[in-house]
Length: 406
Image (tube, rainbow, N blue to C red):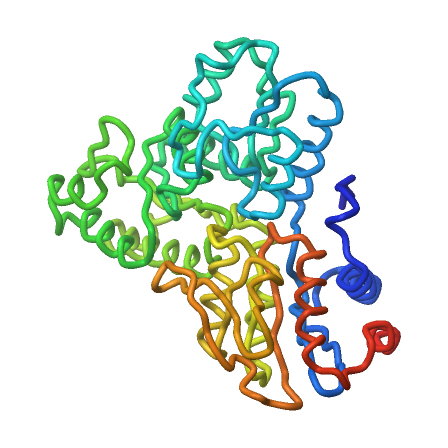
C-alpha cells in the first residue's frame, strides 16, 4: 500500500514501533489479536488496527502540500479536513480558513473568493452543487481534492446502480458531510433515500411491501429522498451503500433485511433481478478497526479509553462497541485525563462532555483497553499512554516494554 508524506509530528515513537512490529509479523493483516504493553502495575491493551487510515493520510499529505506550494495565496478548506481537532487546529494556525462548518452552514460567502484562491476538498468529499459553485468562480477544485478513494468507490457503485435502474439506499447520518456528498452525487444517476438505522430500514420495508403509504414515506423521510421520488414504483430495484464510517455490521444487517423484503415481494428466484450485491462498498479501514475492537471485547479489562474527535463518526462507533462490555471513556486527547482520579470525556448518549471521578478506582494492577479513530494521530495516542502510566511510578519504562515485544 502507498505510503504518505505527512508531518513528522503526527508520527509517534511508541505506536509507530508497535505497528511496524505487527506489520512485519502479519503482512496479510489476518491476525486481529491485540497488542499488550505490560508495564507491570498497568497493562495497556492496544487494538490491532486503529489510527490514521489510507484516506486520512492522503488528505493530510495533500493539505500540507497545498500550504507548501502556495505560500502567497489564500487557502480555504470547504469544512473540517477530518473530524479531529488537533489536525484542524494546526491547519488553521498555518493560515487555512474554513468556508463552512460541518453542517454545511456558510462561514465565508462564495462571493469573497476569487479564481486566485486555493480550495481544498476534505476527505469526506463534497456535493455536486458546491463543486459547480467553486468551478464557476474559476478555482481548479480537482487540484487539491482529498476525497477518500473509498468514498469515491461508493459514488462509482451508486452510479452503476443508477445505470442499472436501481434506487440507492444510503445507510448514513443525513447531516454528515460524507452522506450529503454521496446523496448529491448519487442523485445525478439514480433515485436515492438516506436511512439512519435498521429501524428506518424496517419502515422502508413496509413501504416497499405497500403496507405504508406514499404520504407516510414522505413524512418519515422528509428531506432525505431525491426529487420526484415515487415510492410506489421506485423501490422495484434497490441497492444499499453506506457512509463509509458507519458500523459495517449495521450496514450488513440493513442490506440483509431489505434483501429479505425483496424476496418476500418478488420471490427468491427473482430476487437477484431486484436487489444488488453491494458488499464491496464497505471501507477496509472501518472494517479492520471495528473487527479489531470486537476482538478486544473477548478480553478482560477494567476499562476502555477511545481517543478521537467528538464529532468523528467512525470513532463514536468504536465507543459504542466498547461500551457493550467495559466502562468506556471517549477522549479527544491526553488533556482530558485531568489526574489519576478524574477524567473528562464525551458522553455519546448525553451528547455532552462530562467528568468522571475515580475512573481508575485505585485498581492495581489494572488493565486498560486503548484504541482510536481513523482520524486520530498516533502521536496523540502516544501522549495518552505516557500520561496514564505517569500515575504508576513503579511501572516499567516504555523502552523496556517495547523491547520485550521483539
